[in-house]
Amino acid sequence: MNWFIFLQPVAPYRAGRINRIWVDLSFMADKKSNFQMVWGIALMLMGVMVFFRIPQVMPKIEQIETFSSSIGFIKFCFYFMAVMLIAGGGKKLYRQFIGQKKEAE
Image: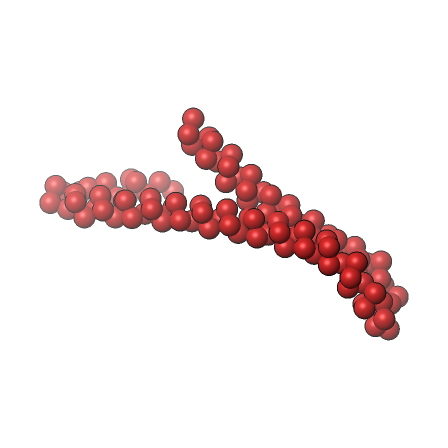
């Protein structure tokens, strides 16, 4: 939705107030993009940390009788979760930087 259409001045006496609202909304969009970048980096870091943590945790999980029979499936789930975290963070960062390049053109 194009917010600029809704924020165009209706009457000359309201132009200052509406222009101020437009500036505030564009500032919020910049803060949102910074937050998305930080969130993407955090997702990727968590995915990498899960990869390093799995070998340390698996022996403890194997000792639990309930999970010892399905250890392969549990390992798959942990690695799948790590891959999804890295892919999600990478997607956010990719869209952040590619989106900025397309807007600049």
